[in-house]
Image 1: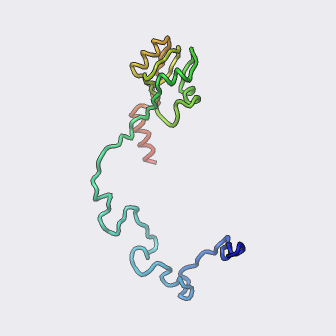
Image 2: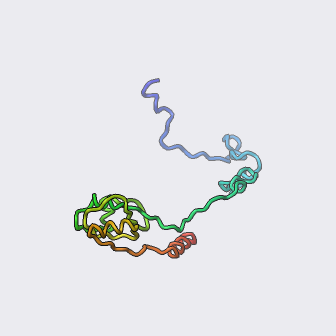
Image 3: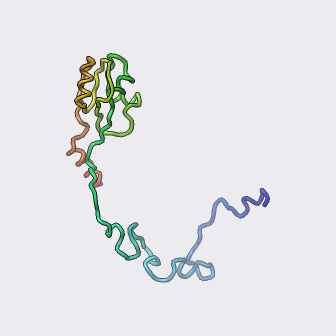
Length: 166
């Protein structure tokens, strides 16, 4: 093989195959659809679960489990992380947490947990606080600001119902 043979026979734009244009074309008469049956008919389409007429697997296998799609996604941040990322007397907000790459991704609420030690005086604003986190923040001379939830469970259900109805 030579280098100039590499692209031989390859065309940039292929002409489309004109099927059903006579027996002499090689794809005439049945136009590559074979004889009879569902697939030979115009407008044919099948469900992804179709298994040749047999009872589909999705109907044979029992449904188990539960998914709580209405639950809010809570992002957890430990007190020790706040102590490392913020200076003494700083105000910790959701925007500041995102800016310093502490709270990443998508979530509905932020919860401050009490893992680790806190020696700095911080004003922490979040949706939820564990008892130990709240105690550690106030013990260090800081304050706790509880933010209202972005959406109540009822609002979340209504939003999902509206999205499904579109």
